Image (tube, rainbow, N blue to C red; front, side, top):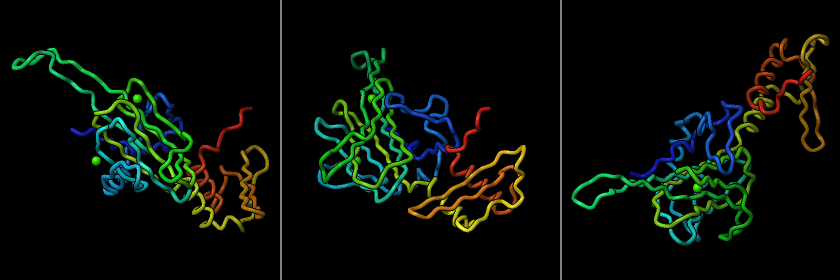
Length: 249
Ligand SMILES: [Ca+2]
Ligand SMILES: [Ca+2]
């Protein structure tokens, strides 16, 4: 049975402390994150796409294949800033420890595959951007909330002859898009300071947007905000929660 990397579409934004490292592909508490069926559906319908050193794959898709002794490469492009999630999975192999016709003493072995992400120029690999190189798991995971526009390639490294599944997804950077949509809806660039700001005994926010030479800021008290200001506070908490930290006194 093909290993199924459906977790590629899992989202992490619900878990502020979600983390991975190059040698620990999944979060030790939250795993790959929260399963997002729509993301998984989008990956599935993007279709199976074969590795190639002369053709690109689309920026979302999957493949079931077998590692070779040569290059197992998937070149793709993103046109602007994207979130990226890619998962490589393969099976532990169980074999019969007795000679036929009896069966028993099962032997287990696990190949060590790695997943690497490179920048690319044409079909030539450039710099290593990120990698997932656990030595003990049968999963490797690369996840980034910020992948700049450009050309990239996944490389599957390790031993040859191993059946694997790779799934990958790039989605327009959701934090930026969601926050920008909210700021536009609230007409933030023409919004005055919150009129009834209590200047004593509450937390104040100075919210500033700058773009080129344009610059606008708004002073607000999120806990007593109403109307537009309440929506602004909710949008910032939703889309920019990584930036909000209590100040230690
Ligand atoms: Ca295939
Ligand atoms: Ca590995």
